[in-house]
Image 1 (tube, rainbow, N blue to C red):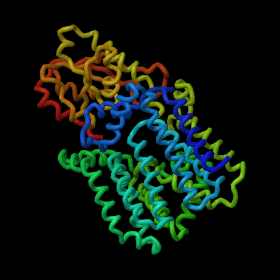
Image 2 (image 1 turned 90 degrees about the vertical axis):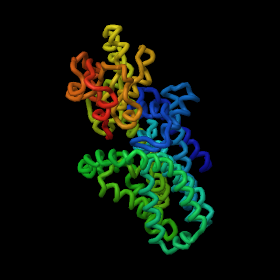
Image 3 (image 1 turned 60 degrees about the vertical axis):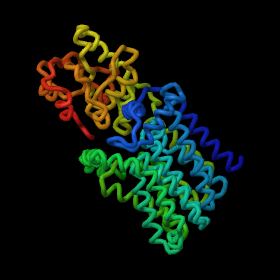
Length: 477
């Protein structure tokens, strides 16, 4: 088998595995949010740039708004990452077997199997990091300054997906300055053009954020509340997320790249991101896109590559799939440690049934009350689920104060009553004269996800117009 054929086979296998489990459970709450955001196209959003909702909108139009169609984007992204990892290993000087092993490591990495299973901002973020690192390797190994131009374009697209790429770019800048052999590459008019391209592509989101009072920074501030916990679990999570069997490989890759006269900038960049996210208390998956480069570099540091090397990597992938993908029966999530490792699995459970409960409460109201009742959700997952599934139950659109949903509100002025799911009853009592508990959600599976036990209220008698009341419902988190 040739190296190219082996790499492409690994990519095809990764795509096939992702698609095999694409519709095993259901949408993740973030996916429901991005689908809703795709119906409100904008240059920016409260908690993200514009690329992910735009891709979700295009995918829904092309695939009939199906879960499998949406998940295919992530599966394709993982296949691209696998191929580029093998290509990076080749550019670094790896032989055929080493190239295939590097590609296989990416295909079997738990973080990539789980992260690319869903379509969230992590999907384009990981793919853009991989493309960017591949382009940087081309630049460093060839010395051709024309590579700055696609690097600038890729960086701009990455900013349109997630601001996270800024850490990688900062690390690359530091790495170039600290590497004598790479410093001449900084004295290039192509770099200046690349920076301009990046700025142009990133500008719409930053302009939107500025015009709306930088809500993304408010979201970051809320997220910083978990920084202590994030630091506590950060390094164990790096081992678990990449698969413990692959830890020696990426550590070898990091050390090898830091010693390499030519590739040191990329090594410094990945080390910088890993350490900085720990110091900042970022989530453990934030630096995940850098592991593709470390896998590619790691195979060069192996003393020899044997059949056992491939066997260990495949075993790592098989074990990782149990917690990264919806392999287990959904009822198995109620017991054991799987949800503690990968809570995203629980967020893919029983959304249509939850919307059906809201529909039953809504339908139980007198017709005259329904005609002036809005649906109010406490978080964007609930609101997104109602928007995705509500039509089949005869429900109107949902409103929510959570993140960008708040900007798409308030409900119409005529709606002086609400059926509210997951909304703090104290908030409802402040704004409505009558608040009554109507139902409590039970997924019937025993899965302790974020929705289990959520309460549904009926509130009537809006005290003030929605234009006055709506600011009190805003939650940027």
